[in-house]
Image 1: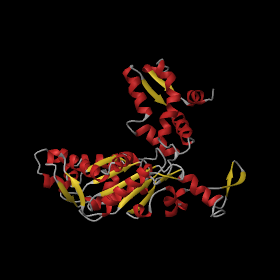
Image 2 (image 1 turned 45 degrees about the vertical axis):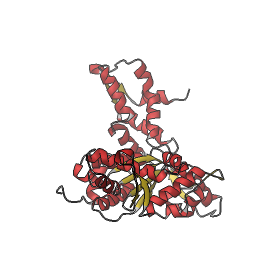
Image 3 (image 1 turned 120 degrees about the vertical axis):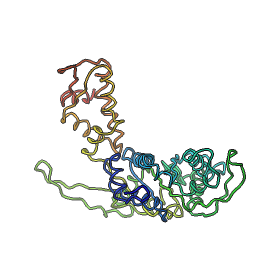
Image 4 (image 1 turned 180 degrees about the vertical axis):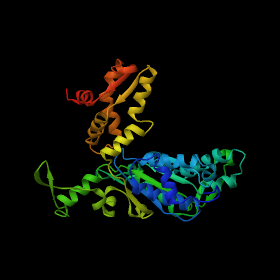
Length: 358
């Protein structure tokens, strides 16, 4: 691929996979959108729904890293990341839309340099990508009560998403005058855990208005035949569930794709534990290396950590650090090698002892 060509969705996905483990569907949708965006084509917005620790923020960071490593692509689209709560706070002041545009303009200035003309910076900002994290925090109601901040934030984002003429006051360094900005070229990618959505949909299909829709399946485990309910949110989620959660129909209609991130499997958790640079395992290795020791975990020990983490309900990769912390803290407190060449060897027995209750 030449520097002037646009990478295909598959080429982008192959690169993002180096930073994101699992979540094939999310990476495919993101790669398609990004390829279209980089080609200057019209592209729909994305909404990612996934439990804490499934990789929503990791996907966002992977896209940022992918573009940052390729300046010829980064200059085609400015990328910013914002927390939905920040938009909510700005919405109360009536400036939520301006906060997004101002962040894009500031980022474009960082990319292109402070000597760049305002018109060029605005053009770059108007074709940016905005990641809105924890978008579920701007729901329109909480516990049955109206959530004014969320309502206003949704309305402000909706204005940016659908309007081609948004009033915007330039920052002081750009002259401070009022302009009308075309925001139709901005790609919005929103993500959230939507805590409680899983339970509300499960209740709907088991004890609620769609009671009986979820049928038990027969399984054989350890020679025993049993019946159990196998529930996957992606199989049962409806738009009405998101409306009931507090996302307005007008807001949701502006997203071409709603992507549900799957809970991570034990094998995926093992890869995250061993391969990602900020995992608890890699951090512990660095610590012991600073003490002149080499940390080694057996395959059985690693799988036991991942299996325990998988039991933490809907915490995903975040559970790995908590579980491994329980295993490693004793050894970090008083580092002593127990193997050849000053190594610290942890097998299944040491992990079992550390995770044993009490």
